Image 1 (cartoon, rainbow, N blue to C red):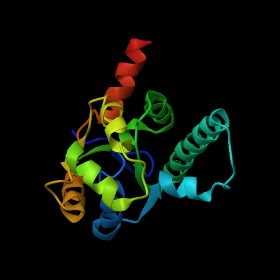
Image 2 (image 1 turned 90 degrees about the vertical axis):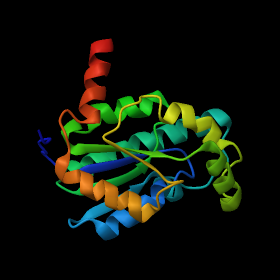
Image 3 (image 1 turned 180 degrees about the vertical axis):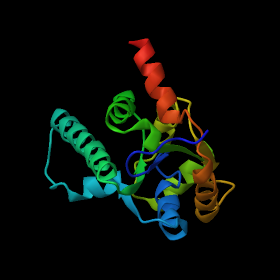
Image 4 (image 1 turned 135 degrees about the horizontal axis):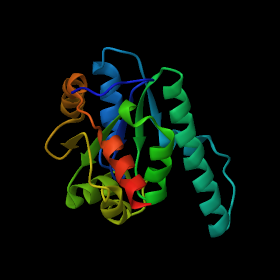
Length: 189
């Protein structure tokens, strides 16, 4: 049974830093037939003024940025826009926030995986991420354990991953991963 969509579709790419989310998102924009907007969380961080903050101030600023980002995505989808989200659930509250904001039938949750050794190599090659960031994220990012579709960027190119996601979209099952996750969260409360 296919999911019933009420707003714009949200293709949510969840994976660690350097896993290939942004590269897949860029390819999705070229292969998908409908119009999509790419919403990378890094773009929201880039919009913020650069100041010196204490560690406590920085934590607050980052949480406000992520909270606003989630609401911007929800607003775009509520307006009927299709969105490719490039983000990660490295903290449980982020998933909970999105579960409360997004219509779960309108979300395709994509697990973007890559082995740690390759993530570390990519981090070193990029040079713009702190060493060990992906290693710290890999457990928490995928801790929820439920996806609609998954891809491994160590064995598939970003274009191949985008093509797999495109082929999956017409056959989205119900309940979606977001529906299952929201139901589990409600039952645990």
